[in-house]
Image 1 (cartoon, helix red, strand yellow):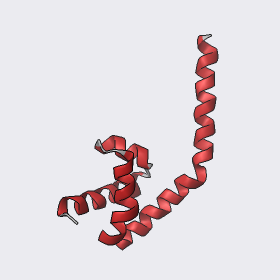
Image 2 (cartoon, helix red, strand yellow; image 1 turned 90 degrees about the vertical axis):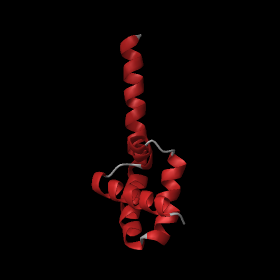
Image 3 (cartoon, one colour; image 1 turned 120 degrees about the vertical axis):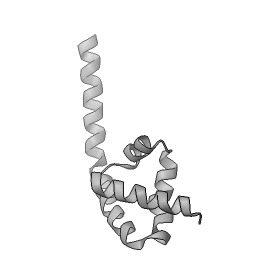
Image 4 (cartoon, one colour; image 1 turned 180 degrees about the vertical axis):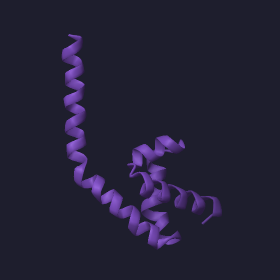
Length: 86
């Protein structure tokens, strides 16, 4: 694996651990696609730095557990804005 990709994997992992960002948030912050971030932290990082991989997985598992709550909140907010406009 290229060194620049390895460095990117570690950089993304450290960022996600420190900030608790989702894959989507990290992708937006670094100007990458969601699929690139996902592949970096879920596949490549395991080979590059197993310790960081385990820490990132803990953050990602939390996001997985609460995603239904965030989705519901986003829907409520969208309908609130529609009611205010109409």
